[in-house]
Length: 254
Image: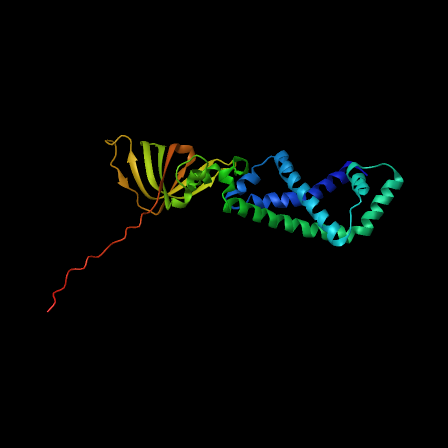
């Protein structure tokens, strides 16, 4: 058995972990998965794969009373030049091929489901905001959504936020301009940084008032490229409900 066969086997064994990681780092956190280096992807797949295989093999052992032959697995991973070992190994694969295929066809979708549920659990109970170890690398999501207020030691909370207002100082041909508006959306770059910021109900203000008149911009959404942004300021607002009370005028009685 050569190195290529062992490499393919390792790849197959890592598929459950890769499936878990792909679905755990999804939605607004998908950039964290795609920007990872091959080494980071390997580590991200290795640890979940070991855990998932361990759980799956325990389940198979106690539910179906079937145990894996560790010696055969070791020969497959390490390789062997012994003719008898090679024949015994491939004979075991041939005899258990339906079980092996069924095992992986069940485990890989299960790993994806665990990834989705894991992300839901972490987000639902704010574990990523309470513990830095579980925090996703998309820091702009925490800032723009206001979830950064849920970090330990920070005032307020994200539940109190109804909308986010941004002031962006931008370099233009006319000079430095501050665009102020409600955050509509944002786009991340390939390396996970901010690429574009979208604002609605935008007002433009020049730092040199005498140069051009300030005014409200017409249109629904303004797109600002991050390469032109000097700095950003975010303000989180909560809409206060005002209850109006009607006073009854005294009526004349006959």
